[in-house]
Length: 315
Image (cartoon, rainbow, N blue to C red; front, side):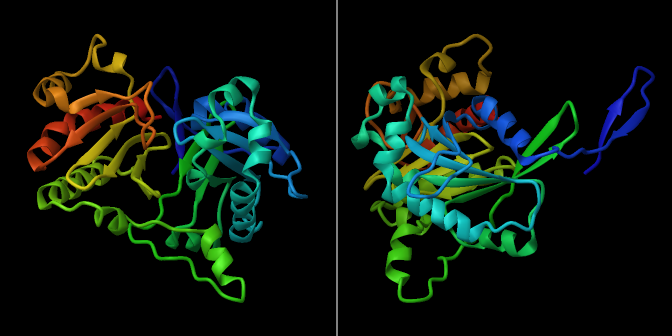
């Protein structure tokens, strides 16, 4: 999609994309702006672990997991094989990654606090081949991001996986080990944990609303919950036996700040004791604010809160 600059006379002039002279320029730019672009903490650059040298190692404080970022200026470089190797490294050599954490984070996150099942590999490329994009049909722990550089501006877009994903095909004698390394999770598996029909209906209602509230929303089933993001994660659905816990990537101050939308104020009042702040307590999902949803009526009341979290976390 072309980008236009409007001058003082209201005339449009197309802004042409430009290339980074070298891959290192793109990597340096992203590493210097990891927090602003991806809400990640920088850990290390091109550090050898077990003979493998990832471009960037980062840490996601929301998911409490490590992230490897790989950069490519062309669309011909491999993605699937390299991603599988990186993800295997993240799972097998977790202790080596923890040692690399800045001291401030090592004090905050011990090995028992790391959620390795949330680890992922992020590719940042100018374009992808059709064969590479076909990997999104499978539930690999990869993210594909496309960048367009306009000189003084740069656009990052996450490529959305298909709504229906399938288990990765595994071939060869190492099938069992690869299955463990690339374990995939499905929404149906999580939904099966809910035992009451009212809570199940609430889960399905919330899921439908979140998926359709914005065309950029990406749904990612994880081991214990389903995450929803628009570049930054803004909501999670956590299934329990008799309820659904709606996680929102908000802080308690967000719910009492000036200028909060009127529908959100009504939702906070109506849900009352169902809303909890788990900022200083252990919990699943990255959202510090959680809402206990027991039926479809609660789900409807929570809709303004979901929309508010989406607004607060949109880029």
